[in-house]
Length: 98
View 1 (cartoon, rainbow, N blue to C red):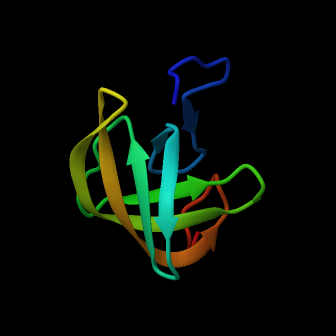
View 2 (cartoon, rainbow, N blue to C red):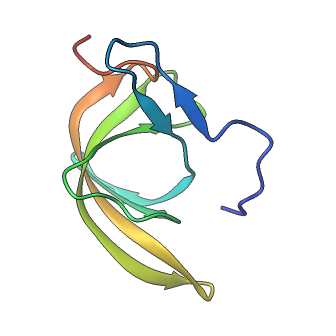
């Protein structure tokens, strides 16, 4: 989470609704079968559906933001997100069910 990047920070999806997906790095602290706890530089929006893409996987995990609270990590304010896994895997460029 150094803030330096050489690749795009967003993805424009080809859909009739005109979806813009903002890409950001997170650090997963822990996970269970249905919950994921992650740390992000940006706060989460309660109820928002997010997609977690892992480097070794071709699909994304769909999750809903249940909780977002500020924490201090190495002297910087970060946001701890508690996420609920809501549907297993989805293709990274598409909403599930499309």
